[in-house]
Image (cartoon, rainbow, N blue to C red; front, side, top):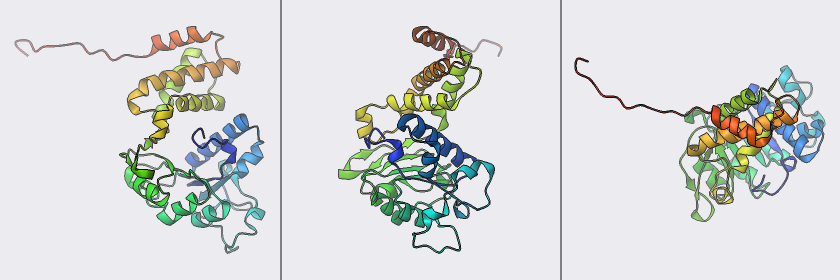
Length: 283
């Protein structure tokens, strides 16, 4: 959103694959829209189009409890030129919803076709494509296809590692690997050091902001949406700090000033130290 210079609530988001992972992502997005943009939970949920095995999740359809808050009202699709005896499929949802963000958690290789990506790019100057399924063989699309279909304008992250590709004007675009390793070590550390009584959604939102702030403007211009993996140790520290401060500010952790909190976290971080050894006679 820093690159697009618009609020998250300005996006129309399609999530393809709405199991526990898809639902978790959707709820995190809703929480961010509420806290950062000040919109209601219901309005935020309507900005997310959830697609599962039978198509778009619609009111009246059989759904698991974790999916029910993301059932779109049927009047939303009343004017869509699609058959009314079934739920709209992925292509129909992207086309008719005016989608600007496409998130894949389906484990369906190739689900994001070039025509679909081209349609997505017609709705926004900088389409967002997160193909988060892994391993690589399960990725919904490939970076080369995304850049070719969108004219190199897409903001892409993947669940699997991919090398850099060519973007608009022949520039090199780095593909960030969107993996929970960025968050969980630091989240655990921050919760333990601050003696948080629970881990809240606010702590995860604070962690996300901290990670985003670690990406410089020059790195963003090269396609990085996340910090380089070789800085993951510092990422863990920043996540721990953000989570601990959020827990403290929510009144469920120790009341420790920032400088002292940072010192406690640094001192608690394990440092691998390997001692030299030599083979002795008789071994």
